[in-house]
Image 1 (cartoon, chains in turn purple, blue):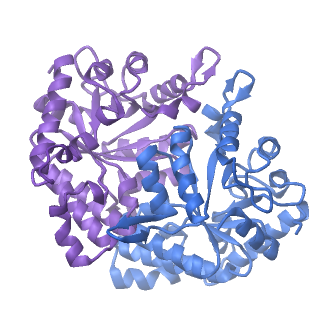
Image 2: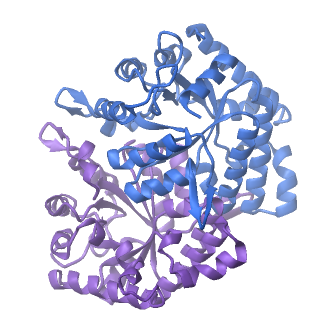
Image 3: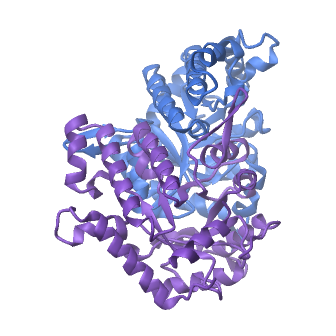
Length: 308
Length: 308
């Protein structure tokens, strides 16, 4: 699905947000985790099954409310192959529930290696006469430090499979300035990366005006967000850093175009861990996640009018 | 193991090279793959088992000759979780055989997410009272586009576990110039990244003069290699791009310090696919890999004298 499919879901739900599925075992309520720890002992399998149950519970609670989920690969790799097996199941469940799935993998490698990543996350690999899917996401995040060679192979598979990607431009973390804010002539590095993203995406425009190569720009830098929205008129924006990292609805409004399209704002711990603030030991984790998602949606809708 | 452990292996074998384990099914000789395709059909499992058999065959053939292996994560992710399960087995086998294992994952993310990656690849994760290992590599490659936040969590785990990492500085691919060669004042971006690597590694020096944060600098850019060797006196260098990508022994000699220490040169397809050039349909894949590894070792030794 292209970004148009995501945009349609966003319009339909009136909610331009994505729920991060980044659980560590300590984010899972005791009541959810305990049966698996009893069954499998203190193993990676137990942790993986506990997190899977939690992921599914969250997805059940949010399916009519949030158009997309973003599993962060690191939290699955943490559990070795059992984590990756569970990630595959999580993505399958998400798709069954109708979510747009953004695999937050930030892969960055070149040529044949980038093609292998792209086939694994968005496409198919050939075994004999069979084309076999890998993790089966709709969209991935990529890191373009290695230049075009690291991005074009993803784009090629994305075109073939009608899928999408986001390249890192201006990330939400404090040390983003270490490199991304340094000045080249009259431009900063993230601006140069933005220009590259613009160039890579050329040749396709969906019905909302967006191509297949989106950009990651953090909510914690509203000025740069506004600037990138203007500089990258055809790039869908993925905006991390809302909530826990300090970004607000007032900040993220700059990510949207005049019609209130073209951006999606992520919240991970804000939704996943909402149950930690209600004092009910997680018995209400679904309700708490739902309330947090509604609160975030409404806060953004106060600042952004999402057109048809 | 710190880089000193790798350096010792290199000295002992007189061979500063690392064999890439980057197999796709088409790199595996028919005779190795066929039994698994018969047993499991055209499945990811069949491909994973075929590649595992090939990996083990290569590692058996090279164990007295090559000090390190570098599995490239992309070729395992390509096969979904079955690939990741096989990667874990491959790393376990490599360590049993005495190889230094560099997991070429080029991960780049921040804070808690970077910590999760680091625990998954180099460290342990906690489940109840148990600390459970993930993929169990000795060393990883990382991407520092997001700055210090993306590297320090890896370094923290590396210190705790006595392990190491390589950060991308100047990659071997043609489009490395897209970003890495742009000029900031009087420095290029890869030089700035080099300075960051230098700073991140401070506070530890092993007996050969190296810290825990190495740098990736491609064999295809000998001038930059010489420059980075000088600018990063305490960074072990990982040098990709030898052979298939065009780097020669004459080029890579610049990666070594005055004692012939401080660098390791990778070859992937040159060793893995050597059997494709002998006309024996892969029956001799181990011998062919061995011969290619000896040829590479000898070519580098003609240009670099490896001291004690």
